[in-house]
Length: 294
Image (cartoon, rainbow, N blue to C red):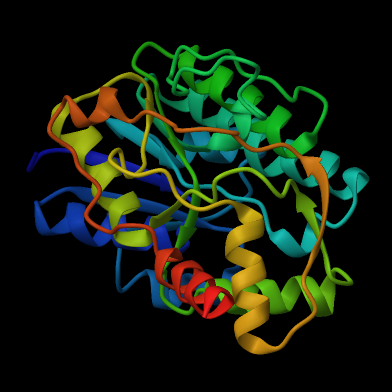
């Protein structure tokens, strides 16, 4: 890998960590940010920094000159997603247009996508796999991940990694803080459904998955999650967090559908990858259940 050159589109927490791991292997890293004030800091981590937005295709193409692949770690800002109108605009720009630019700039693109593309997974009882049809085509948070995936997979060697919610990044909110934000910022309402298993993946497992794909030159679509366990539901987790903190329980609006059953990561596990961190919310739910039955 010593002669590789990689463009990381979006030097957030994941992008910076991937850059660090790849540079240790001798890879030349080009990175992007939308914030000029961050350039000086980022220049200490990567070989070259470009200030651009993902929808600025000409700038992305210029930044990708000589690169062997692009890793698109672009992600929406949750504070710009309170209404469906905000989500429509923001997800379109942050996801679809960024991946469209990446696919035009390089035939090899790796995109960090979301389980939200499955909607609730449909009526089937079998585990959700990469061949399960996508759904929830009207909700922007699902629709534009799907459209972004289509852009990436239109390239010759595109790879899509579908992840659940990520936790554990430096400075990231833990789940109790997220619930508190829902109470304070969203009026105690959660825009997703109560009964979906709350799949979550540790930041380091996300970074490892990206590097695994690069090392093994994988293409196509892969679900990435703990393949051995189905986590507790949104309601079980968030009720337990609220009870533990003396907060009023959240109201679930079910506006954003999430998979309703086990999600299979057999495909990526078969390539030698495994998630190292198990469900972060198991203990809080089980402690709450014990207290309720005492």
